[in-house]
Amino acid sequence: LDAGKIDIDNIIIEIRAQINKDGTVREVKILNAALDPVHQSVAESAKRAVLICNAKEDESPFKILAQKYADHYGDWKTMHLRFNPMTGGVM
Image 1 (cartoon, rainbow, N blue to C red):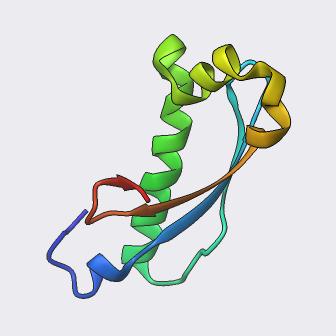
Image 2 (cartoon, rainbow, N blue to C red; image 1 turned 135 degrees about the vertical axis):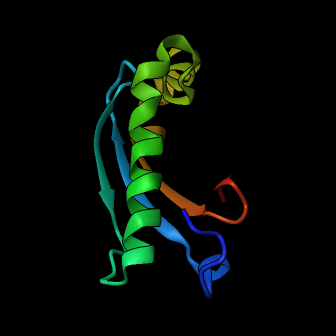
């Protein structure tokens, strides 16, 4: 990611993540796709960040939800996440 690109600090990526009861990520969808190559690159990076959670085993934030809040699965089975590359993570 080229942090020097114009207006990169204004890019906010919105993602919907579908989470299984066991805390694994079932599906990730970019909600605000754009044709701009910089936006596309940031969006794909954000999508990969969510998918990487599957590889983190018990350290995955979604696995922690599954372990601690299984009885509230309906509250977290679908997550709307917002990423900003300049803040370094989820907003």
